[in-house]
Amino acid sequence: MKDIQITSDFCVDHLCVAFPNSMKSANVLSDINVVFRHGIAAAVIGESGCGKSVLVLALLGLLPKYASVHGHIFYNSFDVLSVPFAIIQSNLSKHWGIIPQSPSDALNPIRKIKKQFDDIGKNASRGNFSVEELCDSLTSLGLSDIERILQSYPHELSGGMLQRILFAMAVCCEPEWVFADEPTKGLDEQSRQQVSHNLLHLKTKKTQSMILITHDLPLTEEICEVVVVMYAGEIMEITNSVYTNGLHPYTRALIAALPINGFNPIPDGPVKNGSSRQCRFAPHCAYASKQCKHSHPNLYSVDDMHKVRCFLYA
Amino acid sequence: MLEARNITKSWQNKAGSPNLVLDHCNLKLKQGQSLGLMGTSGSGKSTLARILLGLASPDIGKIFFDGQPLNSFNRKNWLHFRRRVQFISQSPECFWEPRFTVGKSLEEVIKIHSLCRKDEWTIFIDKYLYWVKIRRQLLSRYPHQLSGGELQRLSICRSLLLEPQILILDEPVSMLDVSVQAQIMQLLRKLKTEKDMTYLFISHDRTILQWFCDETLNLRQGKLFVSE
Image (cartoon, rainbow over all chains, first blue to last red; front, side):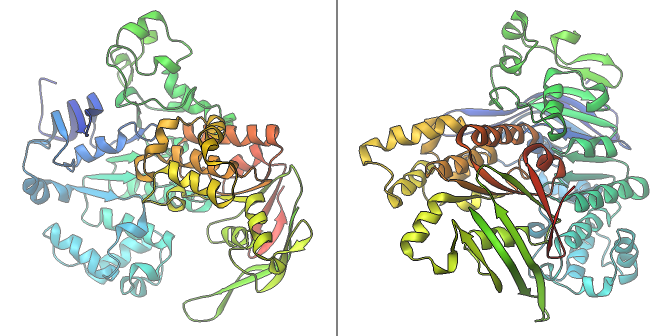
C-alpha cells in the first residue's frame, strides 16, 4: 500500500498479530491486507477463533500490550498501531461508536442510563445531552416512556431495551464509524428482526460506515455491501455477497453448514492457525490439489470488489 | 416416560404482582421421540425445562417420571432420575466447575454415580470422548481454556457417561458459530439413531427444530400449542 491518502477509510496493511503464551507465540492474524471504505457497511465473518474480534480490536487500537504486532492500520493521518493510546482516546475514538455483544454486561450497573449517556458526551468533549436530544434518538429506535428509561438503572430494563440504548449510545456523538460485535447472537427471531431493523435504521439515518462481526450470514446479506471471510487468521475471501458470489471452498462450506442447508459440518471441524507453507483450508478442502498442500495461495482478484485466496481462481 | 400434567407457574414481577409464565401446560415425552419446544425469549421455555428436571417446583400440577410423581421421590429415586434425565444448557461455561480441569469434572460424575472402578476411569471416559470427537489431551485444561464448541461437546460427553434416556437441551447451539453448530447437531442426530435417545429440544429457531424434531410445541402466553 504505497500511496496512503488521508481518508476516513481504515487501511489495514500487512497486519500480523501474535499472542505469546508459555510455550510459543500463537499467530492470530497473518498478513491481513484490507481496506474498509468510509460510507460502506462491511461484515467480518468466520468461525470462533478465526481472528475476527482481534482484527476489530486492532482497528480500534485496543490490542493488549503483550500482543506482538507488525504492520500498519491507517485511519485519517494516523497509524492506529503506532500512536499512543492517549491520542487514540482524545482524537480518534470520538469518531467511532461501538455496539458490544452483551447489552447487560456493557453498561455500568450502578449508574442511571442518562448519566451513562452524559459520560459518553463528556468523553467526546461535547458535554451533557439534553433529554429532548435523547428522546429523539431513543424514540427513533422504537422506545417509549423515555424519561423513565433515562432515570432507570440497567437492571430495571429488559434486554431488548438495553440493546436499543446501546445502539443509541454508539451513535449519540455522530461517529464516522460504527462497530457492532455479534449484534444478533443468541436472540430469538423477533429480537433478531428488531436488531436488523435498528442496524438498517442506523445505516440509512445516521452513519453508513459500519463493521459488523457476526456469525449471522443472513444479516450480512441484509445490511452489508462487503463481506470479509476469515479462516485461521487469514482473509480467505472479500466479496459483496457470500450467498450469490461466495467462491472460496470455505465460504461455500460455511453456507452448507447453515440449518437451512442441512447442517453439513466442515470436515474435522475448525483447525488452529496452521502452517504458512500451505493453504490453511487445504486439509478440509474437497478441491485441494498438490499445489495447495505445498504452497500458500495469495488473495487473487476476481474483479474490482472480489478477492479469493484460492489457486482455483489464480 | 416424562410427563408434565397441568403445570402452572408464576413469578413475582418488580411491582410485586404475579406474572403467569406457564398456564396449565401438559406435555408428554415418549421413548425415542424428539420433541421441540419453541417460543420467544422470556416465554417460559427454560422455566418449563427447570420444572421438568425437578429444579423448580410448579405452583399447580405435577411431573411424572415412569408414572411416579417427582414430588414423591426419595434420595435413591432422585439419583436414578438424574442418571436417566440429563440437561444441556445454552451456556456450557456456567455448568463447569471453573477451579477443576474438565477431566476432573468428568471423573466427579463417575465417582458420584459409582459408574466403574477407579482403574477403569480412563477407558470409560475415552469411550465417550470418541463419540463427541474430543482429544484426551483437552481433559487437562480448565473450562476457560476451551472454546464454546469444545465445552458444549464435553457437556454432551458428561451427560453420556450416565447413559441417559432423556436429554433436555436448552438452546444448545444458539451461542455457537455455524460450523460448530452443524457438528453438534449432527452429533445429536447420531445419538438419536444409534442410542435411541429421547430429546426435548428447546430453541427459538424454527429451522433447527424442523430439521431435528418429530413434533414441535409452541409456548405462547403461558400456553402450549402444537406448531404447524
